[in-house]
Structures are given as C-alpha cells and as structure tokens.
Image 1 (cartoon, rainbow, N blue to C red):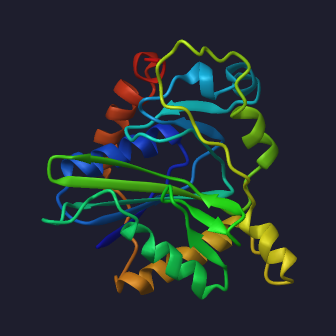
Image 2 (cartoon, rainbow, N blue to C red):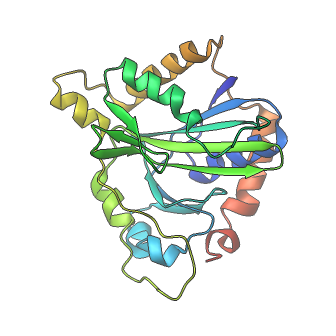
Amino acid sequence: MQIIHSTSNSSTFNLAAEEFLFSERTDDLLFLYVNKPSVIIGCNQAIRNEVDIEFCKGNEISVVRRMSGGGAVFHDLGNLNFCFISNKTEGKSALNDDFLLPVVEVLVDLGVPVTVGRRIDLWLQSEYKITGTASHVAKNRELHHGTLLYDTNLDMLESSLSSKNKDANVKAIASVRSKVKNLRNWFKDQNQFTLSSTDFFDLIIRKLVDYFLVEEVLVLSEAESADILQLSENKYMSNEWTYKK
C-alpha cells in the first residue's frame, strides 16, 4: 500500500487523478485529497434532479461528475476525501465494505462511535451519516472512495443538493438523503479537542500511515500531474461529460 496526498484542492483535478491512478497504475493505493466547495454527482445521475444549479453558480460551487456510481455529495475544505484503489482479489467480491476497515479503526482509536451502514457508509452514534461511499470496478482493478465530514458547511451542503427543477421522466440514479453531522461538532459536544480541519486531517493521515506501516506520504510526480491535468481538462471540466444527463 502506498499513500498519496494531493496538493491540489481542485475537484476536477482530483477526480481525474482517481481515474488516472485506477487506469495507469497497478499497485495498491490510498489517495487522499480535500476539494474546494463542489458538488460531486454519480456517473449515472441527472444533474437537474440532484443539484440546485443556480445556487451553485451564485456561490462558486463547482459541479463535477465522477466515474463511480452512487449519489451526489458536497465537498469543501472541511471534508476529507479518501480513495482506495487496488487489484481485485480472486474469489472475493469487490463490492463489500472491507475497504472501510482502516477508516473505522482510525476513528474508533479517536473515540468516535462509528458504525458501518447497510449502504456501505459510516454513521455517528448510528444516527448521523458522516461518510458516503461509491465504487467503480473494471477489469482487474477496483476503486472505492468516500467522504469524511469534519467541519463542512452544512447549510451549503443542504442548499446545493436541493434541486428545484426535478424531472421525473429522466431515468437516473437518485440520491438517498440522510441526517448528517460534522465530527468537529461531535468532538465539541464531548468536550474534546476541536482541531482545525487541516490539523484534524493531518492527524487522520498520520494514523493511516501507522495503520499501513508505510514510511512516508507521497505526492504525485510532475509527469503524473501533467497527464492528470490533461485528463481533467479533456473530460472532467467538459460540459459533454458533466451534463450528459
């Protein structure tokens, strides 16, 4: 396992990086990144049914389509994104929740009462969703990624994901709405630490480094970044891809 931490906060770049690492590498990876405010919709979703496009435009919130399925999620600088990419294990289903074990163990070690839900998501006190996940499986590779709410702007989340122009005639995957809560607020409720988002993410990354017994956290090479930027511009920034539904 290698851990790569993105130095970019661009949602189009980081989603392109996921696809690049999935398609062009053959090793097991954990890719970590934080995006500027953006709505990330599933590959098979209809934007008009998931997103308040005018609100997003007015608040400089990017709308980007990812390569995996699942529902729409909101990213900002208070949310840590994790992406596990690996080769398939023969005789084992790729669509299970095993990939979440490292995240669960790290949170439990911090005293967080987290449980895995039936949609392969993470719940706080079995009441508030703090992590949504989605997967993409092809050939001999599998990708599983998810969000971790720490200090996300929940008002922005709610408004950006509240479409006012739904079209029931469009055949697409619909998101499942859930009650959410920031981990920072939970820690505050417990009279525990209230680290900044950056410091909390650094803490999580250090614990993941210990979990996987890796020597260092890597960054993308210049050559990889150049290829990823080209993929980002050609696909993830294009209206043809983003507004295909």
